Length: 250
Image (tube, rainbow, N blue to C red; front, side):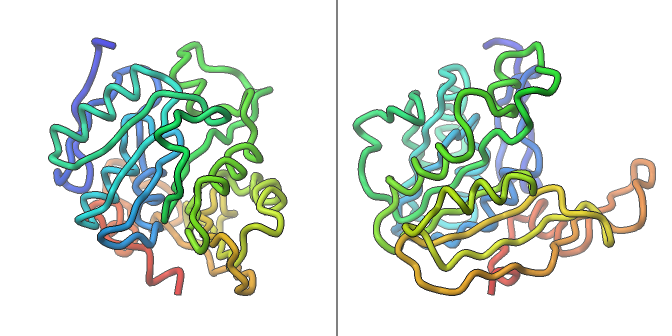
């Protein structure tokens, strides 16, 4: 993979190499990192880590984490390793399949984070294999992602996941009785608009009640206004400065 860009995240706290064409990290992995309640000394596995955006945004916010990643596409896994090194964040990345993980990852983690593909497989498929694999559900449905994450969590470990709002029923069904204390934060692009994505936190063997939170609004105003920055103040603090979403999950 030679045609790359080096892009700033979190107002330049991170710089990540990404393919110029193919899957490119945007707001989803930043929001995912902001929602993970990890603290110093804990272990985190990023399933489908891509170039490492979510894990490294989390590592930039919380010092002293033990970060691991799994990525099926070796060119992306190689970029994730490079991005970890160049940003001075320890990140142990493995190439492999979600359904047959490398032995080194078959251990218990305090946290598993995931940004699985959630565009339907029957839609128009991107001609770029990297982008199509990252975005479109194909051979690995959401159920498999949730069950793989559950197997890798220690008792009372946390799953944090971002996906399309229409994927929520499948995610909840896949968690079954093994996960609980589930909290869902709908993400809406603007006030009064339907939520297109959700952030979910759930705890292995948790027994807390299910909670559906008020929507988190990303943009101000009724519509896009030219080139002006349109994030709400809270969304801007998270997406630009790497703030945590813990306040919204209380």
